[in-house]
Amino acid sequence: MLTYTSRKEISEKTEQLRGEGKSIGFVPTMGALHRGHLSLIERANNETDILVVSVFVNPLQFNNTGDLTSYPRDLQADKKILETVGCDIIFVPDEKEMYPKPTTEKYNFGTLETVMEGTFRPGHFNGVAIVVKRLFDIINPHRAYFGEKDYQQLTIIRKLVETEKIAVEIVSCPTLREDDGLALSSRNANLTTEQRKEASFIFQTLQLAKKRKNHICPAHLRQLIINIFDANKNFKLEYFEIVDDKTLQPIMAWESSKGMIAFVAVWLGKVRLIDNIRII
Image (cartoon, rainbow, N blue to C red; front, side):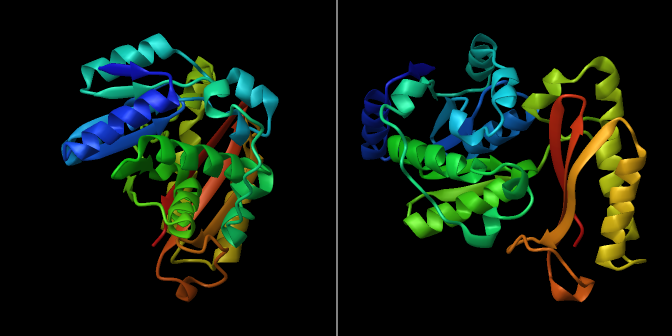
């Protein structure tokens, strides 16, 4: 496995590989790798010749400095994992390498970025777009792999690729879960033992929302789920929304969309967790 910290050097390497006719798969991460990341890596390995994984905790997408500080980091453990799963190249830049000058890019994703995460994390998606665009420019992959747990982010990245006319195929991969339903996330490492037990309540409640879809209208279902979270004092709900899977706008009637997803963001202690479930 080759390790690069320099933008210039990894760009030269990937261009060489492309010149040799190799297809390049790319999995961008912020480290603290878990089985969810490994599922993306496995798929990329199966579908492309060369696998590149980046590990970079992007400060631009954190609007909460405490969240940035507490984000789990263990580069040595990540490298050991990547060596065992057939990663060809790892890109580990520092902040100065990624952002040698103050960032000035401003992206506009319209209503895709004004709901849910965009409401509670102002500037988040601009920070995501900046780092993803730079990584695509540096690595120039044929395919890039993203998990559906961050479905709003996935939608934003698809829009970025479309508007910026980036020649990369975005591949979405299903959310992986623990046996009790908790979506795999690097932030799970920050949960206490007791909080980890309580965290399964999130997916259980999303499953309930899906089951109740045929019995009440979207507005009443939304309020029901909000009430359920409010009644559980272990959680602080930020939002629960049922939206169209393409526009990400709230659903007013079940007949108004062919694809719908329910999204939730909650605080469990000092850990913020997000999840979603497809309703239709």
